[in-house]
Amino acid sequence: GQNIDQPTEMTATEGAIVQINCTYQTSGFNGLFWYQQHAGEAPTFLSYNVLDGLEEKGRFSSFLSRSKGYSYLLLKELQMKDSASYLCAAMDSNYQLIWGAGTKLIIKP
Amino acid sequence: NAGVTQTPKFRVLKTGQSMTLLCAQDMNHEYMYWYRQDPGMGLRLIHYSVGEGTTAKGEVPDGYNVSRLNKREFSLRLESAAPSQTSVYFCASSPGTSTGELFFGEGSRLTVL
Image (cartoon, rainbow over all chains, first blue to last red):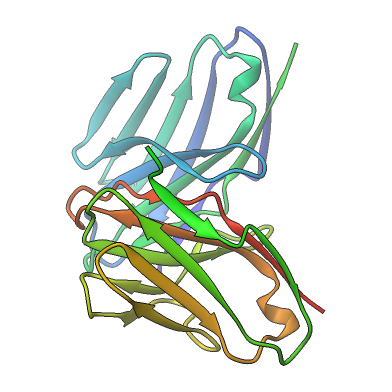
């Protein structure tokens, strides 16, 4: 079956770095997405990886290893506004997105 | 810049009642989707449309009907609501499958008593 696993909740300190891991199993693979969702709001797109390696976008970076079925989202210089849920989603061979349940990130001062 | 607009934002229904959620996007996107989001679970695809006049079933289509009214609008109808359909519903659109990036509406919180 198809499956996405990510931690349910993580806590980090303002100004620090946090890494949110995601493992996936899909029928075929057409890319890995990360979305941010603040409480009570809609998900918003953060990153897309289809090739192995690290993609950097400001304070956020996303890494993919296709051979390991593994990705992580790295957030640097954490700010209070980064408190949100982070959703990992893999696109299968039919171009359908398979979503993880999300990782709730709590930032403490 | 309206993006994706959903109505209504909140609704309370009694079991057996019907209702329609409306979604409109102003980005000229071909693809539109309806998802539901429940605590502890990932977003689950209900139905989707790859263009005007087309619809297809997603992962959890039972109990829902959809209609792609035109390129801008995609509606979701619950003919006979059940408590299991209590959820937050998100409409999303995208220009195509290859990009993958979805643009979401603000969500509609539906409670079925």
